[in-house]
Length: 301
Ligand SMILES: [Mg+2]
Image 1 (cartoon, rainbow, N blue to C red):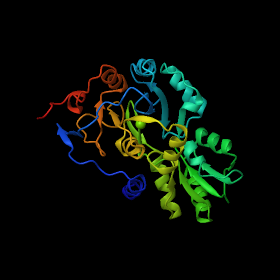
Image 2 (cartoon, rainbow, N blue to C red):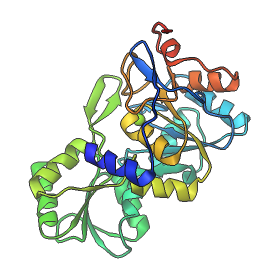
Image 3 (cartoon, protein in one colour):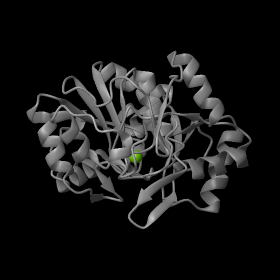
């Protein structure tokens, strides 16, 4: 993963900002903290809008407040398992109405690497399959295949691992929707798609091309669809933070997902808030609380 991030940084022209200020155990950087109330905010779903599908408190009010201030809100998720309709239904349950074009998924990013008509072995759930079929791919259950797409799925068995690894050894390109090692749930962290992808990489002896945040396929998808991103809101610095850097937008870290108070985000966040509602409160009131205040820790000098 480190090597991939290094490649991304070079490609995106991103350099780690210097002069970080430490507040408690959370570091931040000087300069613009709270994202501006204009343009397009790119908001993560897991750990920001919901935890394992359960809405995070007041998230619907936060999105409504952003929209009331004229901010366009679009959503980007590395979770390739749900279909678009399933994601929209979860959003409605959280009090958020949005059209499907306001969703960018790692499934769509993975599908963008496929040419129409190619045979694709999908070791993934409905969202990835939907995106591949929308792209014009022929989704198959066994090789040979032009590509093997691995995404999060509970249907991950030894036999399916063997089919995927064999198809890759026979020449199929290995594509991962994302490489998140875990995903957050109210009960704690569960294995993410990256854990499954690592098994296929190990068994096939090949490294995968990864499509989702913070990698190039999804960056290109977002840049094409939403050229005016003014903020990236997420709970995972290694995906959302690096995506923000690649897009040249502030990274707003929320502590409602995989990152807890007291953890030092890498890359550093431009602003840290307990959750999306608190972040929007900061933005709409024109204030900029420090990460230490948000995290409930003592603010240093
Ligand atoms: Mg997340």
